[in-house]
Image 1 (tube, helix red, strand yellow):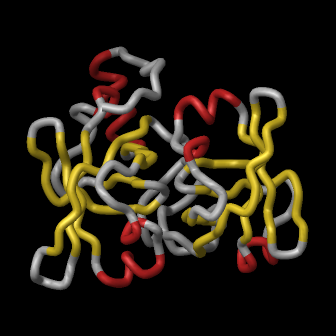
Image 2 (cartoon, helix red, strand yellow):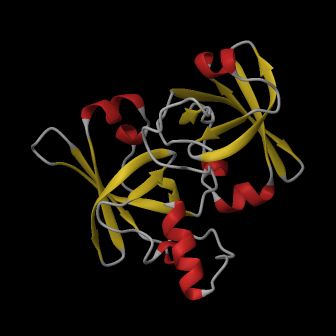
Length: 206
């Protein structure tokens, strides 16, 4: 379990094919000093297991299911990813409950400064999350806990303050970028009980 508060930015230093899987190596001095083999780490919002630690780097094995349903496989060497270690029972819950189970991949449609010091990002709403994203509700975008600023048709927007732009990779994104979305866990359970729908079976982009 995570909170969606990014603790560090990591740099992808290697992607090594292992059959249909990928060994992902990330340089992350802070998290690497705390993590242990077998620990979970949220990488761009995707819960991955640490399989190797070498100095300042962490290695993860990414299986085909994860590659199909997230944007992890599209990340290039040199890319910057958001990292968060799992929540401890004594930690403050500063964001919202994030499982690290990516629902779908979305696209950044537009990026604009509002004039009030924040930056507005507008994303597509994939079919799997239709009805789950509500104004003032919570959403995790590449593992970052954010409040939905508005929902219009099949698009939604968030507003990023300078601090979020500085400590996450969202400020570096340009329109067309692929992002991992995880809807609010409470909204998903309510929707499942109401509709009887228990899964999407797809990781497609809207």
